[in-house]
Image 1 (spheres, rainbow, N blue to C red):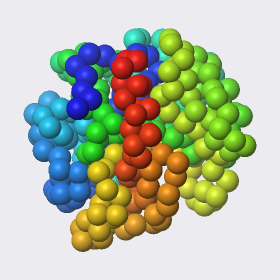
Image 2 (cartoon, rainbow, N blue to C red):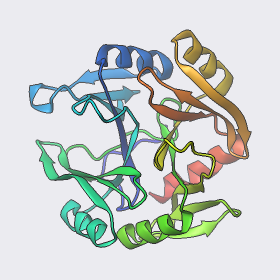
Image 3 (cartoon, rainbow, N blue to C red):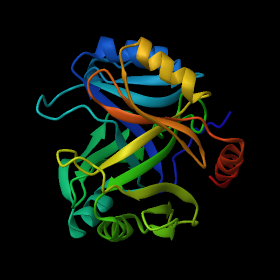
Image 4 (cartoon, rainbow, N blue to C red):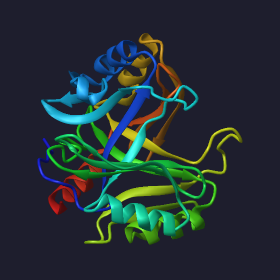
Length: 266
C-alpha cells in the first residue's frame, strides 16, 4: 500500500480538498463512496475535516466560507517556500485569492488562480505533509488541468514550478517535476468545456472497479456525467452532492505498474 509520511518534492500535487454547505451530507456521501473515515478538526481548524483511508490522510472536507464560490475539488502543489512561490505566481501573471498563511501546527498555504482562471493551492507541509496515501482505491491517483489555452498554461506553470512537458498527442501533455523529471500530472486541451465552466484542475480518485463505483454513486443520489475507457483504465466523471465534479478511475494493470514505479521515485 503506497503511503508517505514526509513532505512531497516541490511541484508535486500533494493535497486536495473541497468545501460544502452541508458537511454532514458530504461526509456521508464520500465515506460510503470511498470508505473514508472522517477525522473532525478542532475549533481552531474552523470545522475542517480530514478523510482517512487505512488510517492515512487522503483528502480534506471543509465548510463553505464563501457562498458565491461553487463547491469544487481543489488541487494543491507542494512548495518548500510558499511565499517565494506566491511571488513567482504573481510574476507569471497569476492572481492571489488567499495570501500565504500559517495553518496552526500543520503547515503553510496560499490559494491562487492561473491567468485562465483555474484555481489551485500551494501547500508547504509541516506536521501535515499532504497525501499520506495515494494511487490506492479511495485515494487520489491523478490530477489534470482542463484548459482552453494549453500553450499559455504550459508557460505559466513552467515559470512557477519549473515544469517540463511531454507531448502525448495534439491535446494532452504530461507534466514533469523540475527536481527529477518524474511525471506528476497532466494538462488537457479541453475545448469541449461549456462556456460557463472555467478552466480547472480535475481530481481523479482511484477505485477498485469503475462500474460498481458508478452504481454506488447512483444509490447515493450523485450524478454520473459520463463513463468511458482510457489506456490507463475505465473512468467516470461524477457530480457530487453539491455540484462538485471529479473523476474516478480503476487503474489497468499496466497503469498500476507504472504508478508503482512512480512511487519508488518519490
